[in-house]
Image (cartoon, rainbow, N blue to C red; front, side):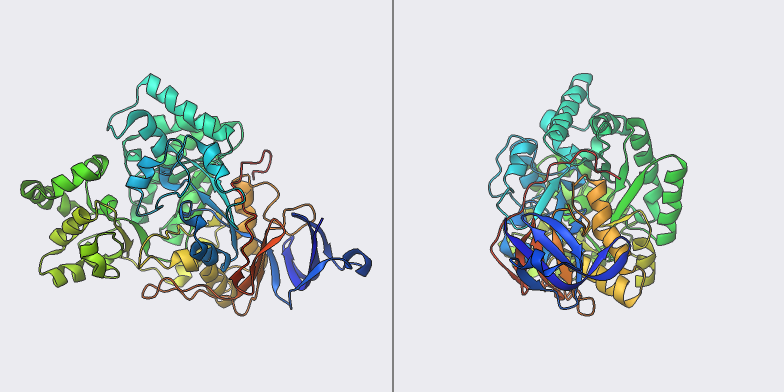
Length: 526
């Protein structure tokens, strides 16, 4: 068995930071502390030089499941200390099924998977085994399940359809999924009511797996609507609740989380350390019925002058009243990805700027872009209230918070969170503002997520735990990606291990691929 000694570091474990060496033998940590020379004589040595030794960070909300095979994406994540991502988010991903639905509908978010063609979660997870330097765990995506059984139909499920969907969820749980996700602003999830979702959650209950939701209703000042529905679902199904990308004011989040606790809901949430978001332009601007009809039909509708006028007159005025948009929506949406050659110069432009460049108005500019791109457009979305770091810090410091980037790696001008979220959390909210200390940061960004999502012996620097480890220079770690220059890599994390093997050395990929598709481990939930 190969042995590696991490020498001269400061281990973050047990609520403290202490000088200690770490001995790794095979895939696991076997000793932490002052170690006798005889025990470590044959071990290779990695000099920590005073850096922090922490468990590999867990991205609780990632859209990297298709991109994880790309070396640039691997580097972007490992340079932030991330060793595990949780995919299957927002109710839409490749499995179950052949992956065609997610590839078409979420192509601008998840992209395509290079190898998976079905039929289920077991086969999807197997594609990551030994094929990537990082791990991936997976949520059963409820929208994909609904599409498998019902297509894009906007109606309640019949008893037979509900039974078929529940069976698919139960199969996914048996194959290792770590929860169930919904995306209730996306199709077809938007067509599912609370009773249907609660029924789909029931296979999670015996294992204590969480219901993970992109809530209905728009977040921000409208968050209570989604929280109340999520509470009904969790209580009915008897499962823990995890709220995806909980972007709202810190005091409002605290109030709603207190309310959930009073209702008896075991709740957690993820949040990224930015005020701007990123999603599909079609979801943001078009009626659900148009998104549900598929690209070919939607493009035909967008080319129809009468239908465009109907959208302009009856649909777009609603955006002015949307809690996350408002009347300046065209100024707030910046184009991150379009595959349309005619719009190659649009990356990084707001819809207002694109309209000016094309000599038209933002509505026509947006509809032209969507039609030319077959709806495959994602945008960075500013919000009317750009909250300061102090407010974001109070949100991140909440004990129910887990680290989640909501990282999207598709696009020429993506949101910087995919390459900066975890590094920004460490630099801004730990080192600069002191919102979290280092032990608390490890709890938020690693340990709590490993427990919440049943990731087994991960999330701690302790004997017996898997050696997913990152070495952090506490004075140098920082995000460098910005909204203007969003693809620059983070700094200050140059050495990372996964399953005991170095996957990042000196800031560069080693070529080792010890990552795996993680199957939910029994008895590890919080």
